[in-house]
Length: 592
Image 1 (cartoon, rainbow, N blue to C red):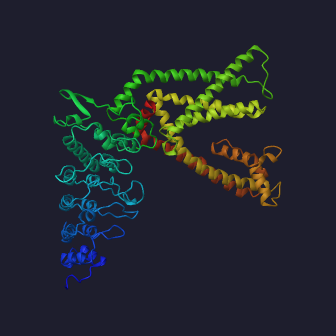
Image 2: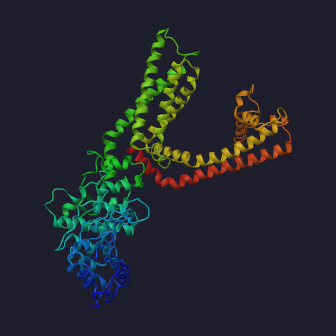
Image 3: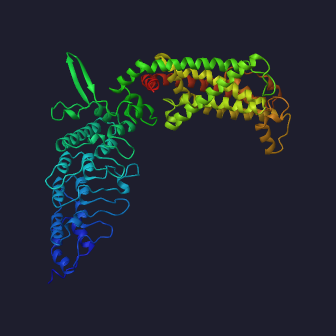
């Protein structure tokens, strides 16, 4: 009577579970039967079993067996053992997940034996990929065992006499256990070796258990339409990616799982065959296409040097791509010649111009060709941007030339619009477009190795060293120019208000002719000092000449001596630093 009258509260059960003291549970079964209660009456899904598994000491907690035994006797074992958290953060986590995370193989076996759901999915925010602090492992118990390097637990879940885990099951992102392993890889040698070993073990054991399945495990796609191999390519997991491409099993039974097959060996020379499924561009969203056009993929140039990708690209280039490239180059030269001829023989005056002489018809034909070419470049650039939105961090690899062609096309089409609107200002965008058209010849420099590598270095310097230099130089230039203007202007014009100062700084066209009262004109003159071409003719009109000379000397020292020499040193350092990367980047550009 005393035992059955004892009151077991939630706090009491959780205290016993956290301390691992089974003596505190004496009389619990009688109490539950007397009050018609179950161990699973928890609003948040957290049960005493989960609490006990979270508090293992030397992989033991004596209360776990007691809880399972009591739950089985009250007829609530299935619900109790598979009870899961239901809050947003840890939703779906069950006792089996915790036992695996605590690396307790004995409790994993016990839970599975008692009926734990081996397909339970922990899909709370803590277990989502890129959802903030947490650990993504693919939601499933099997994925958790694989991602935490527990081969014994993984093998047991895949092959046990109670309930086998379905290796083809997916989480909410469509990822299988293989996808989860790919996401967990980080390109470090130790991590790559561990992930690769677990990956191969899953393939081998699944193949031995399920030889008659129609869909191979590696062919299963996630919600993005990516197989594990394609996902490794997209995420830039170069270590695991290389292992997957070079996977070779000498054992006769598992040899069909290989992607690399040794064909013959003669001394130090050997020849191998590769499984090309999902790699070459004969199928949509292939590995090769993902790597070549994935501007956000890290290690892209290095990944293209891995066999068989390297040999595929080289073979494509030698067979047909190089011919197409040089034909395009010749066509572009013809277009550029026509563009240059039309632009240099334009008529003077107010457009549009009437067609009066036979030569005007030839010029009109050339103009139409130029416009059609601009529309083509615009179309190709938009397609390229849609496929790979340009980002600054990837411009030095690709996208730089696409932007130049896009600007060239837009400027020419803008000139056409201004022309038909009767504005003489159409000449401005026309001239800039023509200049860019000539610069874009450098795009075809990638057709030869030496020019291509040189072009890559130029791009890296423009987007790196020169941009940084221009920012710092612009600050100095504007600051010293403002000081010069204030000294010169006070002799001619009293600055009565900030509004007057604003207009004379930034609206130079109100002056009748360019002078040192003009911010743009003075900026140009100050720039000349930077390149050693400035003159001091305006010093007679300044006040406080001592201050003027101090500012001028400081400006020359900071820009002409310091910044320019620093730029030269930085560019030399850049050439040394990226010399090894440049050839790989060129390979990526020319193959793409």
